[in-house]
Structure formats: structure tokens, C-alpha cells
Image (tube, helix red, strand yellow):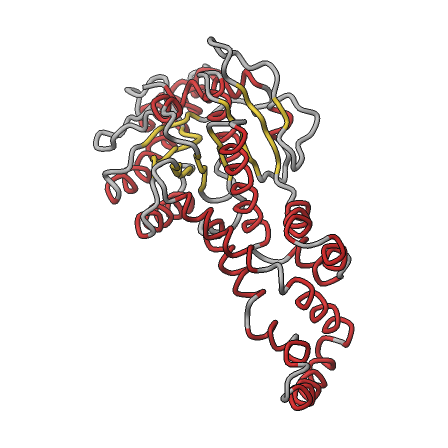
Length: 384
């Protein structure tokens, strides 16, 4: 539903019908409708015959209700009520459980005894629950798992990802490197220096130096914290290599022609600034951009009646006793002004990025809470 003169159209139906595309990543600033858009795209793709899994990271848990599920968890759940003409389409949905995904990584890549030691470690429990970037890293980890399962079992032929509601859309791509740098950094390695140097000629000297160093840290962090960190790193040291390797593999997968990024934005200055920044980042990293979805656009039924004319008419009719008509004209004037402001902001984006295809989604009168609502969004996005 593109109405910008110079912007190419983002053909949603052509995108989801292309079986060479295996992954769609919906990204953008927080609060712009990524979750709803991802769910609507997933439903439309399923009802066009694709076998879809949608992965969401949604603290409000609105997706489960809209898809008719009592709850979403870290396991893909099948959505009933899919109307696929050929009967081949299906839809599974899941919500990322950050800590459970981290636990699964440990359980998969460590022997039972070492996994138990890591899972029970207080530092690991804090890291896996609240460390900055962990959610974004685990989103990449889970995407890698789903992609591997799709290749092995043929369970899905399209995975749609709703990226975490981070302050910056770049966190989804950068978090694995940040987490890896932290776990593999100098500070962490210093904590295990005595254990790694023990048995060698410098063991006693290293232990002495470490003792002086930790004497200072003990006063700052406390003995138990350092003990927990040291125990964690010593336990995970032999299993950590796979973390970065898998993250790099998933990152490379997102650069392939089988993946596409859809940047989602509201027609607001901050959201479009974030969208522009991410478009540039995708270009710099040579990642495939499908286009921009501009969400919650204000449409006007009578665009020929300008805001100024409507306000003048409202004032005249209000003074003449036609209060209801005047009120309606006032509403029209406000919406017309909002639409003009949105158009100005959006056209600034398209002028700076003239090659980026655009699809537009009108502002909905009510919240989406069921499959029919998601279908209406899908239809609006695909309307040309």
C-alpha cells in the first residue's frame, strides 16, 4: 500500500511466496509493531502454503493471544485455524525464553556433571537471566537451532524472527560478539589464571600475583562473587568455544540470499531515524534488505478537504449551532494534519534511501487479539 511517488513498492506476497527465502527478520526500534507485523506475515505466509515458524521476543505476550494459544514458551507450538487452500501450509509459534535457551546450550555442549556445575553456579544464573545482551545473543542461538532443525527435519521452510525490543536495533547483530568478548576477555581470564598455570613452573608465582590482585577485588566485589566467577569460567572454559562458532555461523546465514531483513518503523522521527541507521548498517554488512514496513500510518477518507479548510468550517458551523458536524470536522482536521506530518517524515526517509522498497500499514482502530485481526493486517500489507 505504497503511496510515495519515488519509493518502490515492497511486494509482500511475492516475498513470502519465494521458497528460496528461508528466513525473514523483522527489526526496528521498540514499540513500532514488530511483533504484530511478524505474526501477520507468518499467518499470511502459512495461508499461502508455507510451513512457517515465528519466533518472537515479546514481553507483553500479546502474540499468544492473537494466535489463539493459551501460552507461548521455548518450544514451537502449532497454531490451529490456518486456512491454506492446498492444505500444505502450517504455522508454529514460540516465544524466546532467554534463560532456558542458555540452559539448553550448556546441557547440549557439556557433559552432565559439568553442565550441572555450570547451571547451579550463582554467577551463571545471574548472567543467563539479566546480563546485558544475553537476550539478543540467545535470539541468535535459537534462530540457529531452528534453522538447523528445518534443514534436518524439513519441519519448516520459512522462519520469521521478531527481534528483541532493544534500545538499538543493532543489538541483535552485535550481542553475540559482545557476550563472547566478555566471556573470553582479559578480566575473566585473569580470574582463572592460577588454575590454568597450575602444574607449570610459574604456578606459584602466578598464584602469588593473583592473590595480591584478588585481595583488592575482594574488597570491591566480595570474596563469594569472585569465587563464583572463577568457578563458572573454569567450568565453562572447555565448552565455550562453540558459543562464538555458532553465533558466527548464524551471522553468516543471515547474510545469505535465503535471508531477508524487513525494517519496521512508525511514521515518527525517532523510529525513522533508527530505521535509517539500521538500513545503513545492513548495507555496510552486506546483509539482504527486503524493504521497509511503515506501520500505523494515518489515512484520510476525504484527502481533498485540507486541515485548514476543515478548521475554518468547524469554527463557522460551531458558532451556528451545528456542534456535532463541527466536532467531526475538527477530528478530520487533526487527522489530516497528522497525516501530512507523517508523510513529510516518511518522504525524508525515502529521499535519503530511494532504493528501499516500502509497504504501508494503516493505523488500526482497535488492538489485534485474534487470527482475523492478523489476517486484516496481512491483507493491508499486501494491498498494492
